[in-house]
Length: 189
Image 1 (cartoon, rainbow, N blue to C red):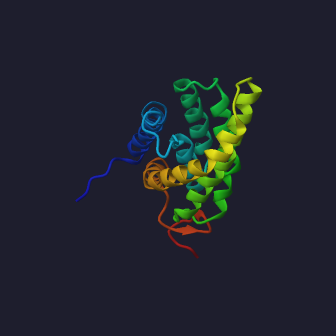
Image 2 (image 1 turned 120 degrees about the horizontal axis):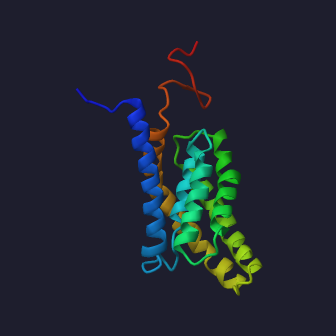
Image 3 (image 1 turned 90 degrees about the horizontal axis):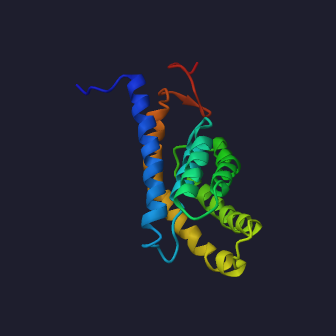
């Protein structure tokens, strides 16, 4: 007999795991990957995890993840406070919110949403930093780095998908019957 924690305790374990996941991804993104970049690119782990959550989740938790994760990245990196928090929240709303129309079990859509978020994030970040009077070369940052960033972040999204899916099921357990993207009681008729 397998003993599972009560529903309330399981939800708290899921919430603690989701906070730890965002903290670990933020620390990896800001402290490990600047030294060990993949093809010269630091993956946007927190953004990709929030986009993945937004595409597989029914509620607004991804917006909270996006804001808190962006704020964490702002605090741990050299970007001005609030830039990533604003961009992550907007991207989760724009890109991730479109996933509610599609099948959430298929990992293809979160990867495509991650690619779209990357294509929108890099130019938006450069523009925001230029508005804050940082001297940044558009050609080098967007045209040279963006194709590699798309590939690296797509790979990161594929690796993060099972982890985020597990945390999502821990924090928001679904009933077993699903019909057109919403839970139905045990009997479909």
